[in-house]
Length: 108
Image (spheres, helix red, strand yellow):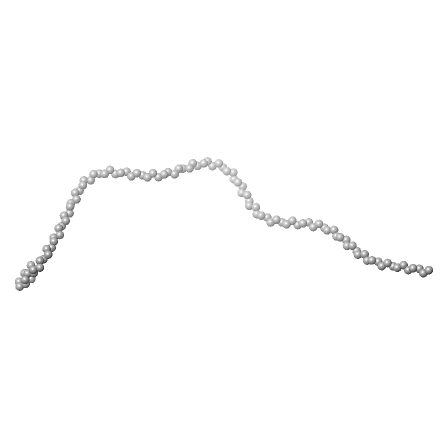
């Protein structure tokens, strides 16, 4: 222990800690199980809902509707009023007052 380093040296009084030997864990050999053939489970197919086919109705020939032409709004023409000829009023002539002639009295 201490002697190998030198003969004169005193062996160390310190107790050396014993190194704990790590126990090697024995690996357990796994026993191989005999494989029994498993029956494969058949996967159930998910039923997809079938879309019901709509029965096609027999088309009865429809009479074609005549397209109505869009009426464009016509601007209403203002009816011209027939001018009724107005009868011209005859202008009344102003009567000028005639001066009465004074009758001269005959001298008797």
